[in-house]
Each structure stands twice: as C-alpha cells, then as structure tokens.
Length: 103
Image (tube, rainbow, N blue to C red; front, side, top):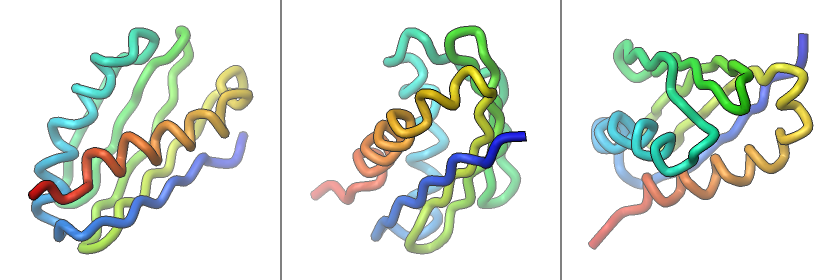
C-alpha cells in the first residue's frame, strides 16, 4: 500500500464558510479537468470522504475542515503515484483559490 498524499491548505474563512465553498468546489473542479470525475462525495460534519477517478484509476480519501486549515489526505493507486507531486501542487493551488477571502 502506498503512502497517502497529504495537502494542508491554510485559510482565514472560518470552518463554516470553508465548508460552504468546498461543498461546491469539488464538483466544479472536476468539471474543469476532463480526465477527473467524482464517483462519490459524502459530508459528515466537517469531514468529506470522496472517491475520484482519473485516467481510469480510482483514488479515495478525505478532507477535514478546521477553523484555519483544510487537510486533504488521498491514497493514489500505483499508476497515479507518478503524478503525486503534480497533483499536490494542483490541489494546493485550487484549494487556495477556493479558500481565499474575496472582498
């Protein structure tokens, strides 16, 4: 079993606003990336568990929303491990866009 990919994204929104943005953000993100689809997304309080598919491979994980940080943990299948660094950077950038305060 491979080590999980972990991404931590700080924010200044508070937990409730971060959750609100993330609830719509995963589907919008998947829609903008042709090779990515969301198979499952389930919220339980401040934790979302998910299963996504990319290049025919399934990756599963969860994200925890705290008052000042979102922590995502996903286990990638071995075929997608090659793209772990690229995925980490992309997740970080997309997450920062979703969680940046707008004036």
